[in-house]
Amino acid sequence: MTQLFITSDEHIGHARIIDLANRPFTSLDEMKQTIVTNHNKKVPDSRGVLTVHVGDWLWHNMTLQEAIDYINLLHGRHAFMFGNHDELVERNLYHFRSTLDFVVGENKAGGAKIFNCDKMHVTADHFARRVWQGSHKGHGHVYGHSHSALPGLGRSFDIGVDGNNFTPWAIEEIVAKLRTIPPHHTINNTGEGMTEDVVNEGRNAPPGSTFHLHNIGETCGFCQLNGQTLYRTNGTML
Image (tube, rainbow, N blue to C red):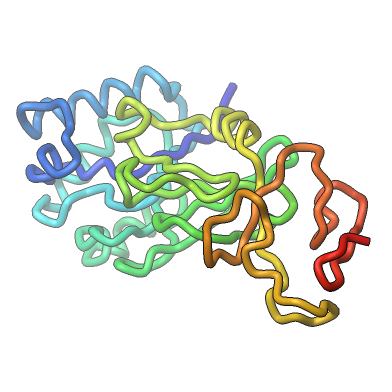
């Protein structure tokens, strides 16, 4: 049985998010009930499972008791990682730290945590990253904040409810999706050990970038992602 779920950007209590994120609801109550129903259909009613909420969870105009009542409607245990609209958690930090499994980061700044599943490290953060731990070795990253408006870079994607039918992701689903995405990595752009600048070397890299993408099984002139090491000198691959 899946024991870990991850989600983001529920915005419970935030009326304007319905219009801002073009959500298919006519009221806050409808939105809340849909998120509760979908959560409880996906997450077992067991204290043995954990859902991690990666920021922008409970809107600042809610009271602490309203937040407690809402959380008590949801199956399983819960943990929290700050986003940029989490004033309610910020001003009641003692309560949330004492009742949730963990609280990571700070409001406005976010915070990150690595989860492991099937030999993949998954770095979760409210804000999307360009690089993360193990990104050059095929490990993954999930984020929120953008309400599905910001495509992932390399092996990453938006974990928020707007892109997943207002439902949490199981960690196994996350890893399976990440493995369908080609990894990327940053490259050494200092010139150390090379005789030319290596910015924008990858054929799939946008102009001015300092990263490139790999197809699965493809060797690389600047790394050892798939075993063979190659070096570039004056534009010639050796």
